[in-house]
Length: 145
Image 1 (cartoon, rainbow, N blue to C red):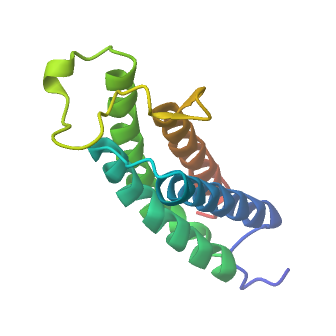
Image 2: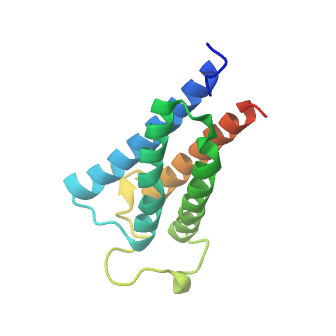
């Protein structure tokens, strides 16, 4: 590896893994919405607004071997994580339904917010954002000063 390279081999793996996670997350929610016909709730839309750009940004960073992407991707992933956390608190009835942001359309805490009838979509989203943040912070740790 030459001196002008921006990343170490471990950085390339972290970038690729983060991109793959964002891509799979994006494809899964598109499948659930467009193929399975499950309309997303308001909070799902907010989470999508943070995940979809991450899939694109991380793809470009992976191709360019740009380990500095963490500077831009962590705030986006953190905002998505907060939306997912709020959604989980509503879904598991930790927060009273009186402060639910849902208007017309599907309920943010309805029983149809599961994948295959078992996995709560809000929890999957929270897990995806959590893993993305961890991968990006590992990338930051490996960055040269």
